[in-house]
Length: 92
Image 1 (cartoon, rainbow, N blue to C red):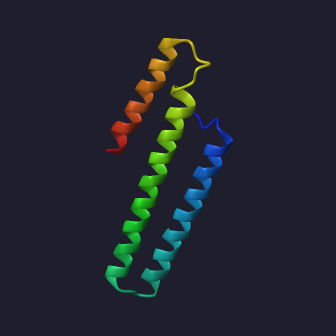
Image 2 (image 1 turned 30 degrees about the horizontal axis):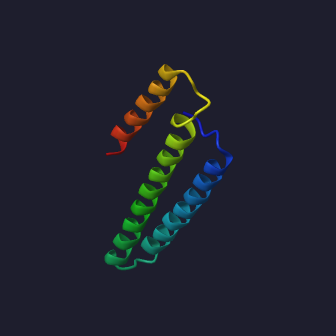
């Protein structure tokens, strides 16, 4: 499955840039020898942001790829659904 929707791609890139900024912030915290509790809290925020990004991507993929009224080939839709389920299996 490719990211064919421009809005989905842009939203994903924006979220990933935010996560990248959070990771850089944690690197700075480690370099500054900040308290472990603060670092763990930021890492938890990063994990949550990545999870949220993944859920949004999967939602958009389901909407854009699987629930496509233009696709009349049921085998193709079934394949896309199977691919999505496989992806979901990898994230749990």
